[in-house]
Length: 399
Image (cartoon, one colour):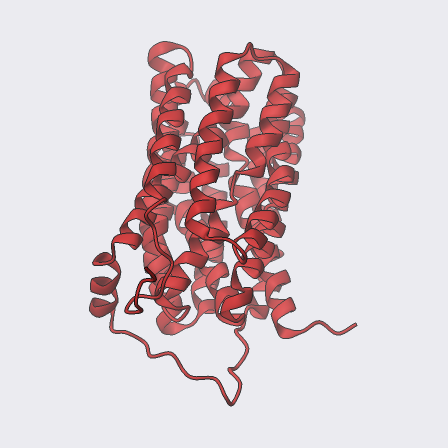
């Protein structure tokens, strides 16, 4: 059976995201053993991961602009090479500055060039409006498979051979990405297609940042970054501490990744039928409720597994909805750049979630304060998304 050009793009994009996001997810697994081996406070390597998240966010609009102006694949190739360099430096990082530069700056830039921001923009351009949410959800869901598998592999390698071997193995895992990047080519528009005009950068920025729904979307996505990055970096260590099992700690990210596949696909499909802002509001409200219940009951292996499964369903289900909203508001032509700025807000939240997690733990000896901050932010984001409108900028808003 011969695949259509759109199907090839979705599958290739899913593979790139799976490798990129899967490798990135292993840093939470090596946080504790790396810190113990090098005699560092947990905050030190937490700062490296926090820098990674911040640089990812700061670099995302730049990579988006490169993709929109010079071609998607050129931007993704750049991200690939920087990512590999960062992982190699992280493998050799015996000093804090080496981890801050490798695992932090370079990996952050690499993920910006190879993960959701650019790949979903390619997919978004390849499908019509009515199919976009479903296609983005499918790509993001398949891309989540990397997080399901690689943390377990990294945990086993760390336990058997040490954190350096684990990070070097993850560097090698990135290499097959080079086979999929050439396939990310947007199909040529049909003869009846109406070309979308490209806005100058200043006009595009003025249009976006003068649009209240875009600003609300940015503020809400900040919370997603805080939640996901805090739990990715610190949840394995938290589970190891409260349940006494390193294996279970690493397995939580894989359980989350497995549930995320289903959740992202389902919410991507729902986004084609129901208002995306209301779906986003529901997701953040559910996060607040689920975290509250988890914090209030005594932690056991069973509650940890159940929590991981439930939170996984609403883990990255925000991504296809948020990216589809950007395309709905401004069209797919400048989607990579404008989604990049929304994602910058996400990564500011990620930086704070990771760094504050390490800082609060070192000061208090627990993550309790962080969990309650996550609950409060979930409620705030649920409220913020209610007034968001997904109508195209310049179109009349329905009464």
